Image 1 (cartoon, rainbow over the protein chains, first blue to last red):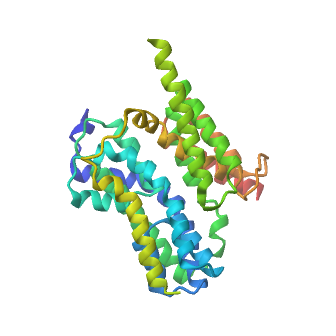
Image 2 (cartoon, rainbow over the protein chains, first blue to last red):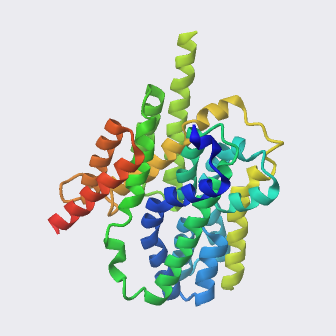
Image 3 (tube, each protein chain N blue to C red):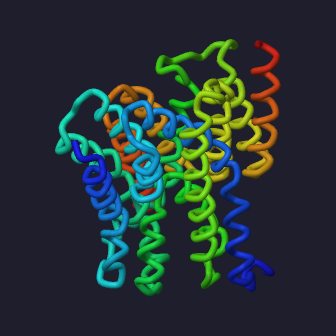
Length: 238
Length: 105
C-alpha cells in the first residue's frame, strides 16, 4: 500500500494529474465565457474578477446572459443561488473528510468546491480512505482547475475572436468521457444501477428547466431511488 | 448596474453555499439516512451532467450516427463497464470520439 505513504507533494501532484481531463473539457467554456462577458459590456478586470472571485462556471454564464437581457440584480443573485445549490450535495458528501481540518484549509477547499473538483477528488477519498492527507489531492485538483479556468477566461478576453469555433471542436467531450469513466466502476449493485439510470432519465426529461434545476432534481431523484432500494435490500437480508 | 457589486454579491452567495457545511463541520453530524443517500450522490450528479451532454449536445435528443457525442459516450460506457478503469475509458473514448468526428466531418 504505497498509496498510504504518499507525501503531501505527491498527493498534490496526483491531484493536478487527475484534474487534466476536466481541465481540457473546461477550456472551451472558459474561453467562451471570456468572449461573452466582454461582449456583454464587462471590462477586462470585471471579466477576470468573475472567473477568479466568483469561480462558478454555470452561474457566470447565466449572470452574463441575464445582464445582457437587462435583468435586475436581485434576480441574477437569486438565479446564482439556485444554480449553485447542487454544491450543497458535494459539501455534504465531503463533510466527513474535511471535519478534521483547520479553518485555514476548509475556507479554500470550500471556495474550490465546483463540479469538476468534486468529481476528480471524491474518488480519491473512496479509494484511499486510510490516508490522512487526501486534502492535498483536493487542493491539487482545485488549484489546477482554478488556474486553468482563469487562463481560459483571459484567452477568451484577448483572443476570443481568433478561436471563435472553439465551442465546436468537441473538447467538451473530455468532461463527459471523464464522468462516464468515473461512474461505470460504481455500477456493481442494483441500488446504484437503478439510482444512476433514474438520474440520467430524469436529467433528460428536465433538461429544459431554467437555472440547472433539472440537474438538482435528477440527482436527488437518483439518490432517492438508490437509497430506497438500498434500505429495502438491508431489510430483506435481515 | 454596478458590475463590481454584482460580482461581490455573486461571490458572497456562491462561497456561502459551498462553505456553509464546512464551516461547522465538527458540530454537524449528518443523519444516518442522509449519509446512506449521499453514497449515491457522486454517481448520480455526474450522470445527470453527462447523459444530457452526450445525448442532447444541441439541446434536443439526438441518438443517431450523426452525433459523435453519442458514439463516443457509447464507447465510454462499454469500455467503462467492461474494464472498470477510468483512465482507459477516457483515453479510448476520446480517441474514438475525435476520430469519428473527423471522419463524419
